[in-house]
Image (cartoon, rainbow, N blue to C red; front, side, top):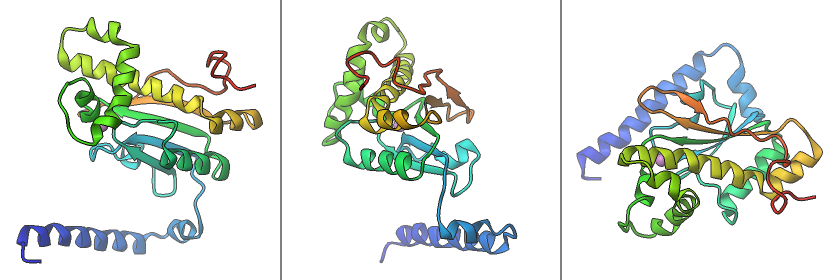
Length: 215
Ligand code: CO
């Protein structure tokens, strides 16, 4: 590489790892040796790919405690094989007990979906958020301030993705077998660090509506 900035940027990653290796080597609890053998997290986190919303830091959890899937605007798209594979593994193999859909205020993906601007291939992904807007257009259009509009859609989007999770065959079949599986919708305030519960928790399929709840 001839570009000094690039080299420095890469070096920073290697140096950062040296600090981590030192931290791990000084740990006396044996937890890293334990983690090296396997994982048994109780939480699945479905969050935004945004660099400002790391699951562990925000929830005060450590390596080994949260299984993570992140994409643009924390979406649960029923035909997304990557999401479905993560969900199936987390629920049926790891037997996680809490699934959290975590949105965040100021989400660029949600903001983009409220505009008419094109951004490339991602436009098609953002259409899933535009669909959420369509379901709640009256409520969102009634808000004057644009930032408030975006933040309302961010909250509503989380709720819709929680619903999408609950309607997957994976979650519904898991509920047939056990009662210790809860799906939550939350939103992160990046400026304060707060993780706010949107009060949209499901622990069974009884409130999904007849068409959505499998027998
Ligand atoms: Co985002």
